[in-house]
Amino acid sequence: MKILTIAPLALLCLLAVALSVHGYAYDFFYFVQQWPGSYCDTSSGCCYPTYGKPPSDFDIHGLWPNYNNGSYPSNCDPNNPFDLSKIQDLVSSLQPNWASLACPSSDSTSFWQHEWEKHGTCSETVLDEHSYFQDALNLKSMTKLLSCLKSANISPNGASYTLTSIKNAISTCIGHVPWIECNKDASGRYQLYQVYICVDHSGTTLIDCPIFPTGACGSSIIFPTF
Ligand SMILES: *[C@@H]1O[C@H](CO)[C@@H](O)[C@H](O)[C@H]1NC(C)=O
Image (cartoon, rainbow, N blue to C red; front, top):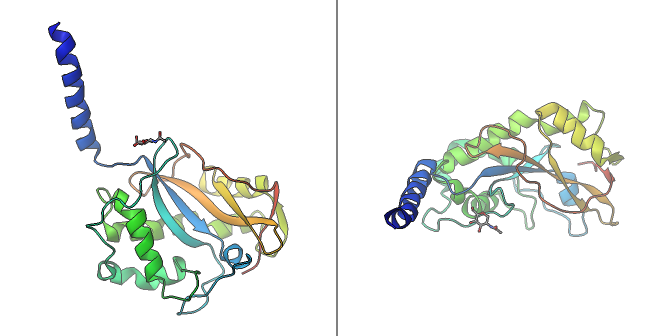
């Protein structure tokens, strides 16, 4: 009798302790980079930032906290809004590497604000705003997707490549299998749009993805120029 009543309570206490030690409300991150050529050549098009055309390289989309079951938390803390002054020292790196291609043209700060408020605040117990943006920049230089692909003779030249060869080139380079998201160009052909790489909850270490997103892609996809 006694054990029966105490056991659930003890379990609850353990859970509470485990959660407070754990300290984060997500399991891992998707680090998502987009190919600007594929963002821009859809039927809706794109607008270059006010500070000019970004480099012909993958562009950071975001660092997204995710659960192992595939769902994800969002907009976790309205009391911790984006504050540009906290990342002033990163702006010159963010502008070319985390550029907004949305219309109308902007200086990208509203993109960073959206990413911080929707996704970043869900990892704020681990990464403050500055670490969040700094970690994403570090992850981009750690992964070097374009050189990974180029070393497998896969270039943004408008040609078609097999999805398998793209995944293999990136896996060989970073040691983990990526997820490739496709979109469609103005003529409806599948193309290489975004690359998802998994990162542990610290935001610094690449891991095998606990779960992959879902979505349609051809077995052969275009890698457009930019
Ligand atoms: C996924 O896991 C999270 C955290 O454990 C939980 O809050 C959420 O309800 C789960 N969602 C689904 C669809 O199972």
